[in-house]
Image 1 (cartoon, helix red, strand yellow):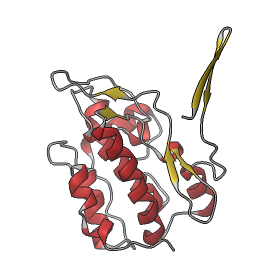
Image 2: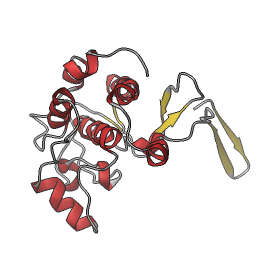
Image 3: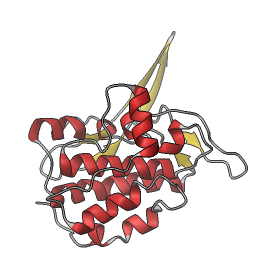
Length: 198
C-alpha cells in the first residue's frame, strides 16, 4: 500500500502497480514451473509471510492469486490482500473460518483455534500448485473439499525431487503441532540448495 486518500464518501487505497499480474494466472497460462523457478518465487513468499508473522499478523489468505508479479527480468513478488488478516494476541486464539477454501488448513475448516501455522499450510499449497500445476485437494463441492483436507493426504508428486516432496509433506501436515515452522522451511534442503533464478 502506497497511500490512502479519502474523498466525500469514498476511500481510495493506492497500491503498487504489478504489471506481471498474479502468480496463479502465470501458472495457468504457462503451466507448472520448474523447481528452480518455483524455488525463486517460493523464497520470496516465505520472506513476505515471515515478515507478517514477525509483526504478529496472520495473513489468512496466502494464495497464488495474492502473489503479484513485478516487471521482468527479476519478477519479484508482492504479497497482497490483507482483508482477512488478523493480529496475533498471545492470550487469545483465532477460530474464525476464513480464507480461500483450496488453500485453507484443516484447523480452519474445522474452526479449531489456530495461529500463524495456517499460513504455512497455504504456502505448502502454493508450492504444490507451482511445481505440479494442480491443487493437492480437488473436489466438486465445499463439503467434499473439507472432507479431503481433513481426512486425506496429498499425493506424492512423481517427477518432482524427493527434497521438494519432503518439504511439501512437512508443510501439509494435518496436525499444526507437527507442521513445519517458518524457520524449518527456510533451513530446508530444497530451499537452500538453489540460489539463482532460471
